[in-house]
Length: 308
Ligand code: MG
Image 1 (cartoon, rainbow, N blue to C red):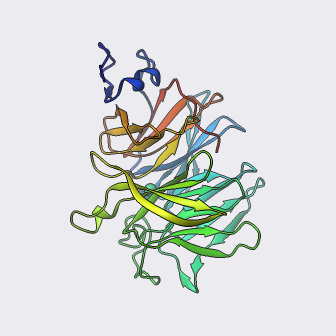
Image 2 (tube, rainbow, N blue to C red):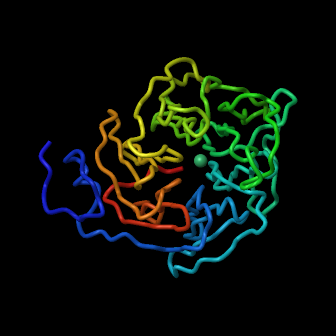
C-alpha cells in the first residue's frame, strides 16, 4: 500500500489505513515517570482518572487526567499487575503478591474472586478481562513467583500457566486454555465470539512463543481455534486492547502495534521505552494511554476505544 508522506516520525506506517487512525499533528505526551515497571492501566470514566501498576515498586499509581496530577493510590499494593473494570464499573485487579484476582467494591472493600484452582494456589495472575455476562477471565503465568522482584518466589503448585474463567453466578473456576507457555494479555473480540491471548513464553523457552493467538468461544467456553493471529515483531505482546472497530492495539518493545481485524499490521506508535500495556480513555475514549517501563505516555487517536 502507498505510504503518505510526510508523516509524524513518531509512527511507522505499515498500511495506509493507519493514516486514518492517528492525527498527523498528534503529539506524544509524557505524563509520568519514576516507575520501575509500569503496567496494567485502566481508565475510570467516573472521575476521569487512570490507575496503573508500578509492579516492581509494589504500588498502584493514579493520574487525574484533567489536571495531570500523579499520585500514589496504594502502597504497598500486593504487587498488583493487570487491571480492568467490570460491568458495574468496579475495578478488578491481578495481584502477584497474594496470587489472586480481586475486585474492589465501590466503597473500597476488597473481595478475592480467585486464589486457587483445583485446591492449588494460582501462580501469579497477570491480566484480566470481564465478559458481558460478568465472567472474569484471567491469565496465570509465573512471573510473580519466578523471583522476589515482583512478588514472592515460590514453586508453582499447579505446574502450568493457564487461562481461567470465573463463573459470574457461582464463582466456580474453570481452566479454559491449558496449552500456552506463559499466557499474558487477553481480550475478547467485539462480539465475544473470539478470545485473543498473548503468549510471552519466549521469556522461559528459547525461541518460545511471542505471539497472539485467537480462540473460538461458544456459550462462555473456549471450544476450538488457537491459531496464531500475529507474531510480535519486537519483544513480546505483553498487553493489548481493542478499539470500537475491532482493531487490536498491542504493546511491544518499540511501542504499540496496531493490527486490523484481519491481522494486517497497520502501524506502530514508537515510544522511547519498552511498552508493557495500554488502554483507551478520556471522556471520548480517543486517548491511548501507554505504560512503558518507567513512564506513562498518551497520544490522541482518531479511533475510539471499545467500552470496557
Ligand atoms: Mg501482562
